[in-house]
Amino acid sequence: MGRLLGLDYGTKRIGIAISDTSQLIATPYEVVPADSVLSVLDAIVVDEGITAIVVGLPTSLSGEEGPSAEAARELAERVAAHTGLEVVLVDERFTSKVAEKAMIKSGMRRDKRRDIRDKMAATVMLQGHLDSLR
Image: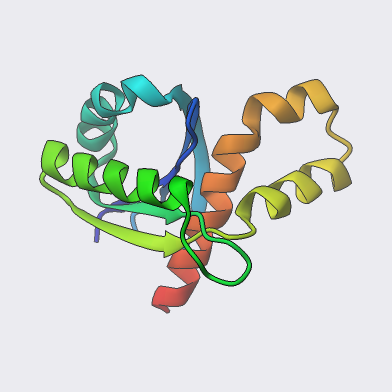
């Protein structure tokens, strides 16, 4: 098995998380500007032995897709074409809220939370996907 990479789409920043090689545990990796994600992925895919990519699909509470979901789908298509890897879309409805609550509960200051929120959301999303695989 290889590692999976999770992407939490945002218009300005994209959070990145990776799994371990046994695909059991997701770990925060980094946050990158949305406009440079493809170039950053090249190095991560090679350096970390990524075998597939999971992209979070933001939907409303009712499950409807809006402009953000459309943009996430477009990102998934670009990532698949660029890397040649399988890209899976998964529901990421509450990942940012779950990540934010966990950081608040741990006592993390607001300015620090802002810096890592996106990669924590990517971690929550990827972990949910890993759990669903078992």
